[in-house]
Length: 122
Image (tube, rainbow, N blue to C red; front, top):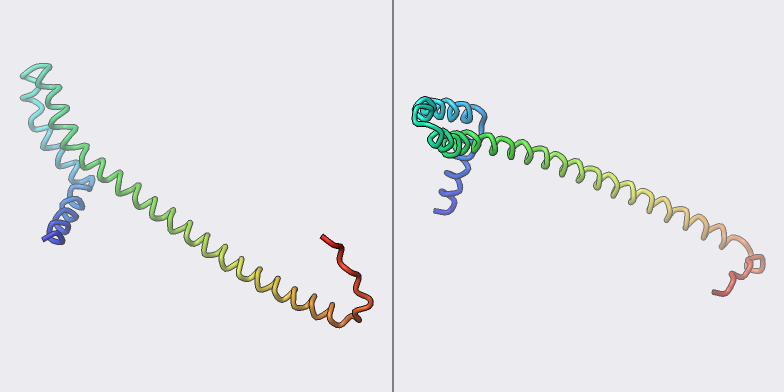
């Protein structure tokens, strides 16, 4: 039952969260505007708050959130790609340093021990 409710909620949100739906809602809201204008200031304020803002802005807000979410997803993917590239670069640097350590160790081992200066005491 929860999956069915989630599916219905997603489908409704996808439908309402379009600019086409906002245009339809605006047209529906504008149908009642003449009656609100005839009824006076209180009715106009009520129409703006209860009809236009709630009906039209709901769709526009969902569209904006979808756009922001898509941009956020794109930034997160770019951040992941950057971090992955840095990781591979760090692995290559580590391998290079390990190869240098082996080469230095080989050179030091080839030099007679008597010519090695003693490292300073710490």
